[in-house]
Length: 349
Ligand SMILES: [Zn+2]
Ligand SMILES: [Zn+2]
Image: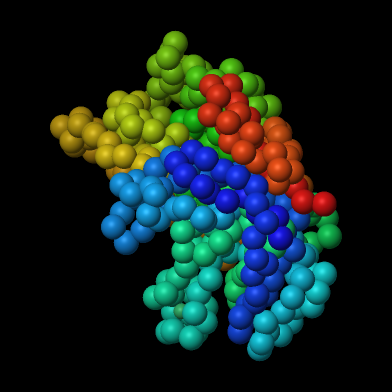
């Protein structure tokens, strides 16, 4: 099958590789759409997380790997012992292969499995490919109203939902979303979905700022030109009570602390790969809470699918590029540009 393979730091190639076989409890999915995640860009630059941590040993952990954890498709082949699915079923999957036998798996908590492997990491191949192997227990059906492009957005929208769920939010909470990449836009959509009125977005890229306006930000500011906290204060009467950090670059935690109101909460969703500094003195004086948001649950996937099916969440503005597998290396180049795409979806015929 055709797949996009990590060859070296910041280098991808399109190759013919062996088609995976579904083991017991697994299915083989024919991939129909897969998103390119900001964390994939990070992984191709710094290497994947492994037992020794992140970003120190690119070559050892990453060469030969196939990325892609935001995907959907149709069931193609079924492994031993799998019931309830048949060829052609439209599904997405939590991007995990778990053992299915340990206490956590039997309790219906696959993400707590002792031998969890993340699909599209160095642990097991992902969906930048014609086929991907999944655990049947982690499949979730896509209703007919959800097209495959939207199916590939279920994972990143669930990341955003997981972050919003951690926010201590009231309808009139002054909120700041830092970064209008796909996750920041997702956070903005969920906040608007919850009728949160005062949401300001900070984003230096003019094209992404425009997307944030289209998705319903009360204001969008370029943080290099204007203090976003002041913009929140102008609209809501006070500095941000809840800040969603969706940038994941060095320096943003200290910025968030400086923007936050007294007693404010900073939900950190951006996946920064290098150590970052805060000033504890400022954080203590303002009595701030940092909340590091890790991923999602199966329930978040189900909530997202329901919101897409009813049109409560309309994510089309965030899809700026649709490419084929052959075009993925070029798409990664574009994603490094300052006014580059928001969400790139790889679509397979
Ligand atoms: Zn992702
Ligand atoms: Zn397990």
